[in-house]
Amino acid sequence: MKVEFWGQEFEANMIVGCIGGFLIAVMSSMFGFGGGPFMVPLMTVGMRMPMYIVVGSSLLAIFFNTSMSSIRHFQFGNFDLILFLCMFPAALLGGYIGPQIAKRVSPIVVKRVACVGLILLGLKLLGLY
Amino acid sequence: MKKKVKLLKMVIVLAAWVLLAPGAFAQGQEVPTLQIDKTSLNNGGVIKVTGRAPAGQPVYLEVWAADKSVRANRFDNKRDPKTGQIPYIFYLTYDMPAYYKIFVPADQKEKFAELLKTGKNWSYSEALKELGAEAAYNVPAGMQIDSFKASLMASVIGSRGKLLEPLSDQENKKRSMQLVKSRFKDLDKVMGSDVIVNPDGTFTADINIRTGLAPGDYKIVAVTGDNVKSSPAVFENKISFPRVYLKTAGTSQNILWPFLLALGVTIFGVLMGAGGGFILNPLLVSLFPLPHTVVAGTVTPTVLFSQGSGIYNYSKIKFINWKLGIGIGCAMLLGAFIGPKLTELITLDQFKFAFGWILLVLAGLMYWQTTAGYLSKNKKEQAILKEFKRRAEEAAKAKQ
Image (cartoon, rainbow over the protein chains, first blue to last red):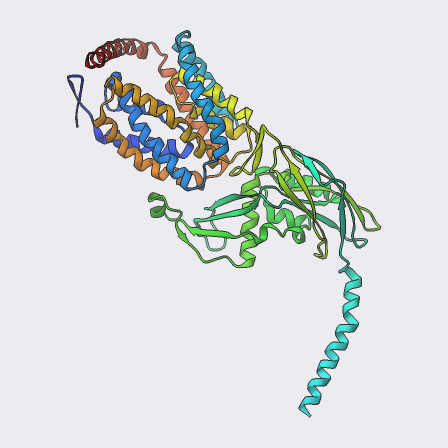
């Protein structure tokens, strides 16, 4: 599929994009996360799109995923209103404070810290310690 | 003549009943009694139960939350040893008491400790049999349980499958035990050996109600080994703000903790460029007694708003390729239709196991983004990104 972006034309491999997107959507809706960190590598590496197209467009694709996933979870009775009401303001507040701090810290340091944290959390879930 | 024989028969039956019935009553039909020392608790505490049962009988106490019930489900995909087939049946009930526990006599303590050692592979029906507590298992046996025949096709279209015929009473009891296990997970949550039975038939028990349980009325019934029940004693568990009852989780929770957790995680999520769900979900299932289905189903809509505002901001500066986004978005719609169905079919342990691996992969991706090769490539891309953003903003301004 041909994609035009700010006067430049790109060839997007939609077969890779759709199959990858489908699998990421099943996984992310099953476990209840957004899926952004998996979508960006899929579109940049798997579909060979430049980063500046991917940031906005992947967000749009994920929005479809999250909306459908929310509806389905609601249908199956997995939605707890009170828990939602106490986390939702926190998410809004966090989304406001986050970018303010982001200007002052190095993204590489944050990612390395996140990397260590994720490994520890992952190993804990696997029951290794 | 015929009439006389009939009359004679009736007299014999009546005589036998009159003679034998009081004997039966005297031997073990004596109804146990029980009293409790307080009628209300404040977010858990200890209730002292005293009572009297026929001497020499074991006494079991069945305690449950009488007016708060929750959903419990279990997917049976274990091979049946008799038929050699995998049943693929999904059992679902909405009547599971938010709290349920059977207390057995303290002299069973050693046997109980032995059962606790089996760890995660305990069987509720065997534990009840082993401790002789089958007579005390009554409330969950009467739950309304729906069973669905799951199939691959049904899962693909995101349905629970075909609703099967209602279960027989015996089958209902058997399945209800498995649902109790899938709901409460640990043996020591549903059984304890705290009833001290004295030789004269009196008994005492200190029943410890944990913090963080459902509010409302709880009932206690004493059952003797001969399956004779006392009338229930009722006490109320009270909770007060900021502790609130989570209906789908069946537990009460101080809401400040999820709030602070969500706040911390979203801030960190913004910094590392990944949504908070990755960290929030595993922390919520590890730290709080929440079912993984509820965690997944509640965190998902939380990020919806921030995604929406992100899309709005990018669209203002024309930074979204709608064709590409919607194209992949449609494939993702299909995937998201199926995913939540699968969440129900897995157990908490499977959820944690899979999530553990996902986090390790994510950690790998994060590390890859800090390698020199990625950074130099990213630098170029970021420069282009900035340039495009500047142009986009100018274009947007020029329009105004």
